[in-house]
Image (cartoon, rainbow, N blue to C red; front, side):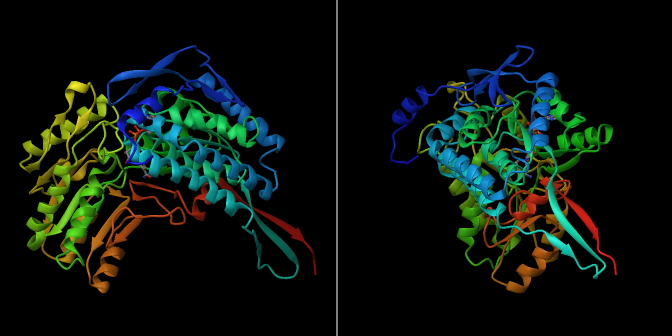
Length: 500
Ligand code: NAD
């Protein structure tokens, strides 16, 4: 979506949308078995867009049965990789072709700026699916070095029925990081989008069918976490759960697996990433600008947000001044306006949660340096202005807990050892960054930081070829890169006796 488009044009496009709002099971849109629906709310207005089928245990059961049946039949699971590639490439192209529509759905559903959903979320989702499609007919299996008396073939087989339970912050993109490798490796799957943001997952289901993915291979069951999500987690015929969401719910999935069929679980959970700026950063202004975007992008609703600015004491004032200058210009606006850089929080609950953390920060004695309030209340929407706390102690709640909003906590340090200590003093280990000109320091600090991704002299950069996921309570397993395929396949050794 071009920034040159006017808000009126975008609103006119939005007014022409139709909303798919049912579950997609075995190649067809169907209502929930119970007939129940729930409101899908636009967080920029607080008003309902449509009513979504409220999937529950029975719907999950139907989807799992369909997924299992087609998996056993082999029309997808045993399709030649080159053929699967063709179908998935078509699926990726169809997503790309519908960029405008899907971006509008994403923005209306969860409040992110249209310029982000159209330039980041949808194109990267199409890229992710296309990347795994292109990879699948280029991967070889192995033969073990056993000796001449036998041949042991080590082959990767699809796990079977995969359930992908995904969050609302990048609804289509987080789902696509799972859809790409899960389908490319030959599995059948059920996607359960977050109840706050089901529209794009539901819509792409018919694009999957149009691309030629056989009935039952790709299913979408919208519904609530405690019901539809739990039913997938506890299902005796789901082989693998791939989850992205909070650490708290990630732990539930471990329990569900333990109490049911010991299904494979991989977890991409929360974060409290330290963005460490040393006094010898190559460009302090660039570091400060990246720090601001590292927390304000996507309204701060980013798992790897640089929510802790860990900055060397001697340059703190200079860095903070620049961070705040960027924050002051980021006035929350209508997500459908192509000029908006900061949209609405996903829902009322999340907005209140973030405001609660801002109050906690003030009570704990941190200095509120910027923002701190709900704004644009007259719209009925859930907007929070960019917020910066100074003089934060790393033991404070706002430095320890994931806020998932545009709220930055600034903490100072005196030397690299102290920076690492503060950086690692968290239950999370998703991402971290270090800014320094000194290559030795950059390498030592990045090695010492316990995080799945460490950026040096940048923040939040990435590519589908580079793995993403956490250490510690940020989870385990990786999305993106060829490593993601490990989650959706299992090794089979076929030992062929030859004899002497
Ligand atoms: P959430 O954990 O509340 O929900 C995630 C998904 O789990 C949703 O589909 C939800 O319906 C489902 N769910 C909720 N409760 C459930 C239950 N009791 N049983 C089964 N399923 C349940 O997370 P959220 O609020 O949607 O997303 C924000 C969280 O996601 C943040 O913690 C963020 O850090 C994390 N996240 C992590 C990554 C990553 O790659 N590590 C990426 C994006 C978001």
